[in-house]
Length: 397
Picture (cartoon, rainbow, N blue to C red):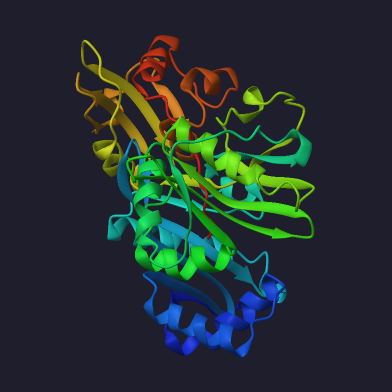
């Protein structure tokens, strides 16, 4: 007998079912207090919740957070996919596929131009159009290899209280990268305070202006840096000098940093432990809307680059386009009819299109990998019009 499958938005009445599956799937147990806090978040946090029912039984779920991400210094509306889970007896029945397809349509209807997620398996989400867009470096530094302590002109303040003072510094730092979150007050209070516990030290320059901060904790002779944010070289050096002041308490420091971090180059002995860790994935939800908001590089003349986009799960993106970029970098995707095809047009899937526009890999690199095809002259033109930006995400959801 064929099973009855229903995919729909979740309401408050499904909270207990949702929490039971989350705790099972992600292998942790909430305390009564944590469950109550989660219930409040379920009601108050800007998000959409989706559930799959099989024969009227709660079988699978996902959620999409209403977020914003920086791209080229602009905040883009973004859907953060999280909490994807299925009871074992309902797996491999296409339920997650149905949940993701519904959530993509809703994201488009809400104007969320891009979506991001933390994958349990990169290959699984690639099938649905998400692609890796960022990685970070993880350092483990023995105490004797830490940067040398220096005298700095500013002042380090042991910080507690209003996150607004940190937020000002964070937003200036985050907007320099592609794929960072624009954090709300709710995010600071509900996410950062819980996921990044410990001490906070805020650095002020000699004029008193906040220029950097570090969130960290010390346990078992190890200093773990949860967040290291700085606006200039002075604040970067001062924060590392502050960390080195803990040398009598610790044996090592662990920290994750953006992929462009150059600390080893500045060390007397750069032979520290380093690991490059692939992190989050992203996919453009609305290609035309995304391109219209995206800032390409300026140029002496305008460009009209033919491009074919494939997108199996968001069919509104699929088609032939002319990517028209004016001299100032403003662009649009103009849809073409089949009889208007242009020889040598760039061919790209939506995940790869996302990765190249975010700057994770460049078009010429992707061409060498066989991930995009087309006339090399068109690929070079696209390559030259995409700004050089590093991707980074110091958050998790």
